Length: 376
Image (cartoon, rainbow, N blue to C red; front, side):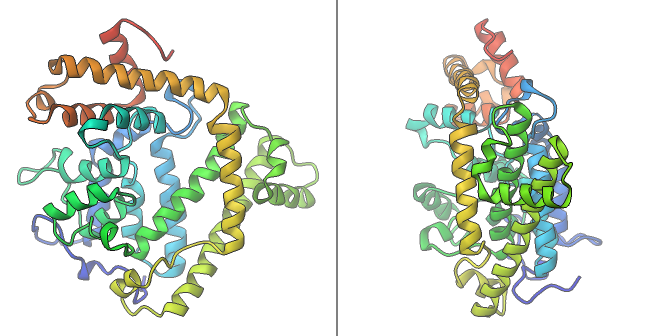
């Protein structure tokens, strides 16, 4: 496929932190994607969950299925815009590698535990996984990914951490958070595809769980418009088929909106290269109308799903598991693996160890170490 002039060209990559010979049959971005898929951290995503924890059901989204959905959406859009699909896929598959067990509850608890030691950011942890924590190669730690993939993985970063990254890697992936510039278009696209994917699948998982209903979703125009549209065409449609059809139409509308809006922004800015696109400000996005409708959906999910009493009860237990695990390892680091025990920064080693756990391993370890079973 022919790339647009503003796409990230692998032959013009800013390269890897450790120089390597080019692969004979793959571009650098294809090689990044393959390394991510074969990584230990990627395999763990199948047992790390989103809103609903691993023990609550087999059909709810995991970090793995979420990452695959983000990759599918982002690739569909990138192909139409003639962006680099391989880079988009690599970023999408890697963007959640640093997530803790138990979704955002685990992340919040670990951030609290690390408050006096630099805190915990899951995006920064994803970069840490691919830069340092994966142990696969004889000559370097991590996966040694290209700058462009690493740039996309680090989609959020505090100023303090950006300064620390930039001190170790001047002008590298932390720099844009200091000078407020943008990443490449492929990274911008993955960020938006992430939002589109989780809003859609949280509707599906929320209805499947019984915590939200189709009737409640009637107050969300972005969803209800397409539910009514589906019923106009298929009056007898109901249940899961109606839900799936409404979500499918909603996703398609959002994808087409992103394509149309981004094309208009690119035409207006006229970037002649990937670097010019970075300098032009955010170019990948929704129209104002779609952004507003999407915001209503996000508020609905926050109020009715993420803050539902049942979800809060479960996530409260999950936070307790993480906090108590951290305290046990702090008191006796030898309960962790030898590789973590030997590290000079005990707190960061504990954070790395816990962040790498799956939901079920964390729950088992907590029960083994405390004698209490919180998540059954």
